Every structure is written in C-alpha cells, then in structure tokens.
Amino acid sequence: MAFDHDTVASMRAAVALVNSAEAPDTMTSQAELDAFFAEHHYTGGRTHDDAELDAVRALRAPLRRLLLADRDTAVEVVNGILAEHRAVPQLLRHDGFDYHVHAVDSDAPLAVRIAVETAMAMVDLIRADELGRLSICADDTCEGVVVDLSRNRSRRFCSTACGNRVAAAAYRARRA
Image 1 (cartoon, rainbow, N blue to C red):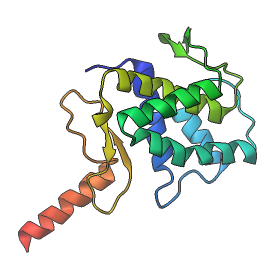
Image 2 (image 1 turned 90 degrees about the horizontal axis):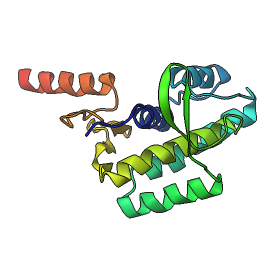
Image 3 (image 1 turned 180 degrees about the vertical axis):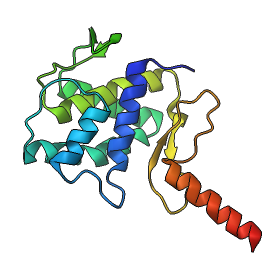
Image 4 (image 1 turned 90 degrees about the vertical axis):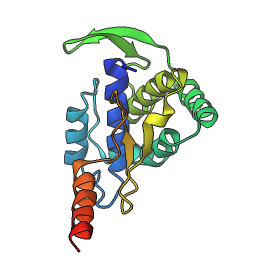
C-alpha cells in the first residue's frame, strides 16, 4: 500500500524522534533539535529554548508506546492527542509540497505539532489496518523502532548500522 507524502514524512520523523532516545541519546542539545527540525521539514516557528527541547524529548516515550500499540490502544491514544490539542484538519500547500493535511496551526509549540502530525499519520495506518509496518529492530542488541513503508515489507532494521552489525555477526558465525 502506498501512503501519502505527509504520512510517510510524519512516520519517519516520529520513528527518528523515538529512536533518538536509544543509547547514545541523540536529542540532548539545541543543535540536535535544529538538525531534526530541518531534516524532517517541520513548518512553523521555534522558541529555541530549553523548555522546547525538554517538551520534544518528553514526547519520545509516549510516541514509542503509540507506535508499538495494538490497534485499539492506538485508536484511543490518537483520539486523545487529537482531542487534547483540538486538532482541526486543514489542507495546506507549502514548500513545494502539494496539498496535504495539517491539523494544528504552525504557531503551535513544536512538541504539539510533532504529536498531532504523528497522530494524523497513525490515523492512516490504523484505517488501512497497517500497524504491522511498525516493529522493533531485528538486531537483538537494539530496541529501536522500525517503520517499514516499503511495498514488499522487507525492512527489519532501524538503521543500516544495525543491519550491518547483524550481517557481520552472521558472517563471522559462518566462518567459525
């Protein structure tokens, strides 16, 4: 199943944010938050203060629970996020992207925008009964979350590093 650009972008951003909590923590400074913001093309303003960084960091555990939840639990969490932030979906076009859905104003705090955009992306996965596209990394030494939006559902690792580590270990085991 092909997903719209905003769903794919939001899911990748949510997984990247959740996985930033894995050791070593990669969301500890304004520079790391700046890089995340730029990489995932969030719109709207930023405060660039410690409160914003703390709020974004605080999202990681709840988003992890959401991404790995069963369907009924995910629906409850998504509905809670959308209600809490009074999300009102609107179609917008910006930055070279055609019409897509935003559900909060661009002046909402960054953590709110991340939470709501993730919830809106989860709506698509839940409606399509595609939560199986979210899983834990196949590397036994990693707890990272994997989002597999490929057609053949073949993604097993949260990063190339984990895939390489498992392949190297398998190669060493065969040689032994």
